[in-house]
Structures are given as structure tokens and as C-alpha cells.
Length: 546
Image 1: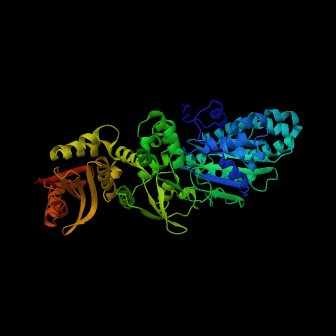
Image 2: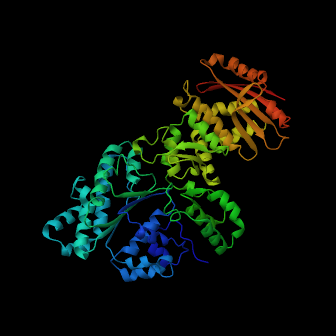
Image 3: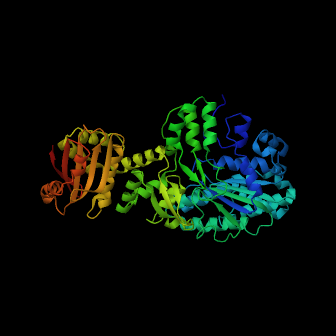
């Protein structure tokens, strides 16, 4: 059985060390047949972007062409007409995956270091340069340049490579958006955007030395910001009908790998956990999770535990009541209709209208159905992603540790005074005043949603559903009808003195409006009625059990 290369993104090492490999060399054939000069591929993290770029580098690179040719033996590309392009071009491969910084000043230093490292790979060119180009080249390597001058660095490198080989240059830029997302996250986006807009456009537009440019990233093309000057750019996102099988794994590939590792009996479980992504018209599995499952033979969340959840955490910091209601619908298995434009600026990403687009392109949602050109129905892709939402909500509203466990145990054992005490403790110790200030119903709604996610499996949780003579706030219904159900009504008040009075009003409302009818119709015998009043971080619960 071949070894599994988890986290290895160097194509040469993967092949030479005889690691298990899903043959994605048809991607090379598609790239060559694609007539567009510059291509951008946007896919979620850990879906094979860097490995595919590494594969392109070894395929096209004119240096060590004969040696690299052996890497493609018995792979799909070897049998195609496109194989004649192997080893025909100088290649620049620039990865920006580590270009993250907390300030623009740090980013400037990192840009200089990144470009200096790139140029050091081409030191052999110094022997062929005139004195003017030599000075420029050496200054870049020695970091004796200001960041403004580096905007033209890649164009300069394509020029001297062309002069050396008399061949146009293939430029590969991996994770183009990492510095932009970092800048956005740390609030220096404009300066970073201005630099990279010029940095990319100079090398990719009207460059006579360019054979082909390929970029990868997570978020969709930002026409208004980065690529507005590029009229030769073709963008392939998860919504595109081209290159649908180039990233991620097809069901056929997954079934074969499970057979190879004698686990074909797990296919239905694996599908529930790691399938569900729709790229164009293809349904694909998460490759990172599949590789980890093959190795560890355990169904759990692998992808969501990797780094890169900054954006989703930012989202949850700005969450509103309508966002939570939409998330609830997603957790109930419903689809969410959204307009997905794919053309907006990163600076607006976390606005309410952009949120779902970000989550879609980042892999936290997937397409269930395309309605028309701009409108889609979105859903949660699989169990693994559900796990991420659950974990993120828990940590946001309850902090790390076992607080939530004890809280929910007290509730499901019908120890309401203990439940009240533990909930009060969480509010006092783990929650910001800004979360609970007057008018922020989203916080309490999110808090309750977190409870619902925790109880998933043994209970069905519902909110804002009609029953009896009105709509209850929250119901916890046991799947086993012999167990106890809980009806909760929430009310906020304007003073701590009114807490008990208002909690009793909430309890009376449950009884008066007969919110228990639907539970009784479902043959639930034992019900606890809970009126919960909030004032900032203070609470009071009035309850009645039957």
C-alpha cells in the first residue's frame, strides 16, 4: 500500500517518493487548450491548488526538462497531444501563501523578502546580464529597493528569462489573495490593494514576454479592486462550468481510493461527511479530508481544524439577527436563496449582502441549485462543515471548555435552578457587555442557537414556529417521545428589578397562547415551560414542569 502524502504540495517529491496520487494531469491538457492568456482559479483552501501549480511548474519548465519528463510517466497527460509542450518554457512560480502581516510596514518587509527569495532562484542569470540589469537584479536580492520599485519586479524577471532562452515565460502566482485577506483582517487593505493591483497588472497585461499567467486563490475575482486593468483575464470559480474536476475529488476517485485502502464499505459514511461540494456541474469531495480519513480511518472533522478560519470568525463577530435566522434555516436542512455576483470588492466582504458569497467561495456553503445567472440556492455541504459551525458558535457564545456541557446537562435533566445558575455564570464571565446591550437580540438568539446545535442528534430544536395561538421563541423536542421537551419564551427588560415580573409574563404567554399544542400532538408527555427574562448580563427564569 502506498504512503499517503498529507500536506505535501510539491509534485516532484510526491511522484519520486511514490506517494499515493490522484491523477489530475488532465488539468494541464485543459490549461493548454484554453486560449485565454491569463487564468484565475478560485477554490476553497486545501482543495489542491498549490499541488496543481507545482505540477504545472514541473511540466512547463525548460530547465531540467528531460529529468522532469519522467515525472509524468504513465499519467494521463503523457498520452495527449499537449505533451509536446512539456519542458518548453521558462517558468516563474511565486507563492504568496506566507505573505501575512499585522501592519503595512511589516507587509512591505515581507514583500521584499518574498521577491528576494524568488530572484535568488535565478542567480545563474547574472552571468548573462548587462551592467544595468545586473544592478537591478542584485538590489532586489539584497533588498536594497523600495517597495514601489518592486511593482515591476516580475515583469523584469520575465524580460531577462526571455532574453536567456528566447522563449516566452509562464508565470504562476499561487494564493494571490493571501496578502489581501491579511491586510483586510488587519485594517490596512487600501495600501496593499494599491501595490498588488500594479504588481499583477504590469506582469500580466501587455507583457510581450508572457506566454501564460495562472493565479490561484480562495475568494472570487475582485474586479473593482485588483484586476480591473486586466482585460485578458479568465476567471474560473466554483460556479464555472470549466475545470470542474481539476480540484477536489470525484466520487469515482474516492471509491477507487477506498478500495485501494480496503475501506470500500465506508463509502456512504464518507459521502455524508466529506462530499457535497458542487463545482460547476460536478459534485466533489474534500481531498484534504479524504486523505486524512484514508490515513487515520476515523470519521471526523479534518478540514475545519486546519488554519484559515479568520474570515468565518470575523463573520460571526458581526452577526445579526437575520443572519442567525438564515443559519438556522441552513441547519434545519433548508436551502438559502442568495444573489451571488462574483464581482465585488474585498473591502465590502463582511457586509450583510456579501456574507453568503464569502462563505460559498470559502467552502463553508455549497450550491444546491442554480436559479438563474445571479441567483442560487445554497446549503451546508456535509457533516464536517456542520461541525465547524457548531464549534465556532460554542466558542463564541460559551468560550472553550466544558461550560456548555454542564449547562445542557442541567437542562436535559430538568434541573432548571442549576441551569439558570450556570447560564448566569456564562453571561457574567464569558460575554462582552456589547453583546448584551439593549437592543441586541442577535446575541440571545445566537446563544440559543448554540444550544440547539449542541443538542443535535437526540433532540430537534425549533425557533419562531407557529403553534397554538402564536409563535414560540424556542422549543427543544426529544426524538424519543418518552423524554422531556422544553418550551422557552424570551423577553428583555429595561431594569434588573423587573426581571422576575417579566419572566413570569413570558411563562404565562406560553400557557395563554397554547404553545404546547404541537408537542402534545406529537405525543410528547413531559414538558417544561420556561419564561426567561434578560437585562444585559442578568437573567431570571420562571418555569413550570408537567
